[in-house]
Image (tube, rainbow, N blue to C red; front, top):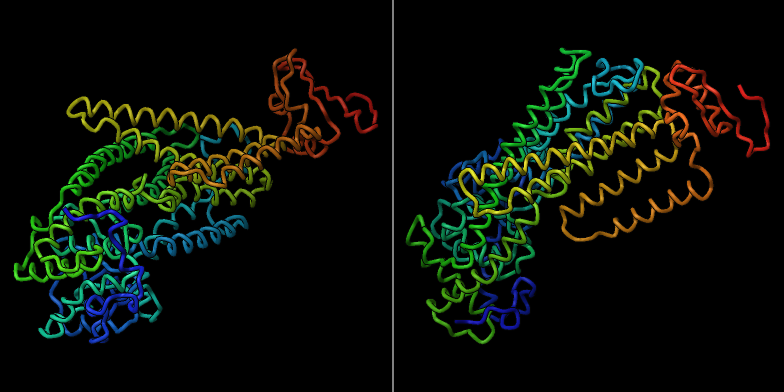
Amino acid sequence: MFPSTSEHRRYLGSCSEAQLDKDIRGALSFEECPDVLRASQLGDILSRFGKVLGFSQGSEDTYNMSRAVPSIDAFLSHNWVVTRSSKAIALSMHFFWDYASCITLAVMIFMGVLSAFGFLPILSSRPEYSGFKGPQWRFGIMCEVVAPPVFFLVMFLAGDFASICKLATPSVFLDKTCIHQTDPEVQRRGIERLGAFLYKSDKLIALYTDTYLEKVWTTFEVGSFVALHGPSQLVVVPISHAILMLVAISIAGVNPVIASISYEIVRGKRNRFIHWVNIVAGGFYAIWLRRWAKRKDAVINRLKSVRVQDCVCAVEADRNVVYNNIAMLMRASIVGRRSMSQEEAVEAFNARLSADLSGAFETAFGLTNFQYRHYVVAAFFMSGGKAIDFWASLSLGNSVRNVAVEDLYLFTWVFGFWIILFVFLEKIVACFLNLAGWKQALWVLFSNASTGILTYAFEVLGQAIRSRAETSDFWLAAEVALLLTMSCLAAWAVVGEPRPSMATTSAVCSIVFHIYFEKGRLPQSERVDDDNNIDRHTALDFLEPQNQSALWRNGNMLRKLHVPGRHGSLRLCPDYSHGHRGDER
């Protein structure tokens, strides 16, 4: 067995061409044929929804989609048996997700500003906000309606836009466009330099499906890239993840719209329809998570014993070309083994696959099924659009403070609660993978029920703080602290390691509470009257909204509220700490 640990090998991708031996340089460089090193623009590959990804046969026109480049940003490793639409969705979501998110957010903010000035439609008050009396508690709807279509249009048409406008996008290697498919001589030189294409690529994007590691070419590509650059530059994009996220974003985007319409239909009543929709969607999501956890575990175990000889090659004549490339790479990367035979090199490559790929794929899969940015966008469609739509209540006389309090509550769900719930469900449903049959079904139900209980706990916590933050600076600070803390916990849950932001959040929260406690900013009126067991909110229920506003505008001179009884009179005590004495009113 040949050594495969780091002290016996070297990653050739970290070496410049001048540092390579002469024979190795000839195999990994394009000195003799610089015109062979070509790459295509990602925008051209994804134009017309990835039409070029539909079939493997190429032509002169497809070869002209590439041009000579000094280096390649990303090597696209995929199987042609996978459908064109699946690969286009996965690549668009990987490369254009951030652009679509930023543009959608800008459109939503623009819609929110228009709603705040009364230029867009406004819904009636929703039953879940029945605790807030008054016509000013009304929402817009345009952000929830417009955001999902804008997001998908930007993400899936970004390639066409870049191609038409000749905008620079990442340079990528696609065999169909970068290796000539009609000229046999140029094609041979390109295939022989496949290792050089990998050497010149900064990253490898593996569009993973169940057939990915069953094909000899893709197994060679991912194994050789890890041998050249190490596992840190390997990016695994499971196509099933992309499809699931597409469905999840669609559901998250449609969910608030359905809720708004259904609330309008059953105005004045609590509507449970949307809750059942969420339960059903959560059940299907949990089943998919369970299936993927089993598949991922099987992939990691299979990689520990993968052999390139067992992989399928569509054209058996190409197998010897793959073995020659493997022999060259192994002779160069394993110190002291320059004279090994092809058979020995292939076995060394298998050992390298077993040692490296299982850990590399496990790292590439990540601690969670999706990245933090994916969770944030899904959560934003569920609650963020409602937060911006609430700006419409400003045109009806609602105060900026009330809008800020409501937005803080909703953004706590966006950046904290929803992400924690997603990760919690992923982790708990992936336990006890050896269960099967009715036991597995019971565990999935238990996972969903646990997530539902945690959701209810988050809702109770958030609403308890929100209801007090409208009239208390202390509880407003507590709501800000809750947002920061939950956001950091969510990021920590996804990334998997402590972040400096957690310490920063703790420090900010400590300072906020220290200021309010030490300098007397905690209003005594917030405390519950022991004699009557009624807090200030009960007292305010007796007042009209305009009197409530007048009362709290002068709240700096009022320190305590006394309510003799539910139907008694309201007695206020002035604040004597300011040296001002007045009669009780």
